[in-house]
Each structure stands twice: as C-alpha cells, then as structure tokens.
Image (cartoon, rainbow, N blue to C red; front, side):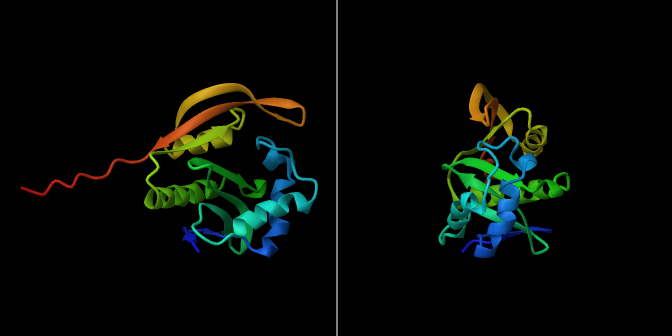
Length: 172
C-alpha cells in the first residue's frame, strides 16, 4: 500500500477511525464552500468516501495526516484531475502545497499521463494561488458549471504538463 511522507505530513490510505475527522471536514461549510457538492449532513454521507480511500492497491488519493491528526485529503482522480480538501484550521500553513507536491511527484513517477488537470471555482482564490505556485497554468473557463445549494458557480480549468526528462547526452 502506497504511503507518502513529507516534512510535516504522512499521506496514507484511510482507516475506519478517520470517518469522524473526515466528516468534520466534509460537514464544514467553509471547507465545502467551493466544493462540487454541499456540506455533508451526517457521517453516513462521508462513509463511502472513507471506504473508497481504504481500498488496497495502487494509491492515487490519500488522507493527509499531520501530527497524528487527519487534516484533509487529496489526490488524482478521473485519470488526471487533482483534487484536495483541507480543514480550514490548517489553511495558510503551506500544508496543502506540501501534500500536493508529494502527490504530483508520485503521479509523475507512477504514470505516463502527460498532464494533470484541475477544476476550481474562480472565487476560491486560495486554490487558484496554490495551483499557480505549483506551476499549473490556466487552460480554460466555463460559466455555471455546478449548482450547489441553489447557487451556480463557474470553473477555471488548470493544467500542469509533465516535466521534460533531463538530457541524456553523454559528455564529450
């Protein structure tokens, strides 16, 4: 089972005991403000996510563990789209950047997919800045892509191209 480690985080498969902290994230209106679905009303709405994150095999989506505390989750889904969700108490500390950096490196090392994409509500300036810092570039825009709790949101699309391999020209 794949497990990634950064300076401050362990990115791992979910465990049954992660249901409560993940529900705390998925039920928080601040965390879910720009998500593609409304906040969860009960833990049973979160349970299928936990079950999916517990699955054995190659891992492309991870729980973010910081000092033995579940603070978020993220990874690559639908073949090449990166997604992430972090508890608001941990915003602005560089932890999402750290986690996504590890996920992106892992994705490049384990696939031959030429790019990673992201779909972000343009009002989510934190995510827009995060993706830009990680090297993503805007690749498109669409209006009224999600209707959540009676409110339409737009999408700005990002892409990150696979880095070119270093030259292997022998020295002369």
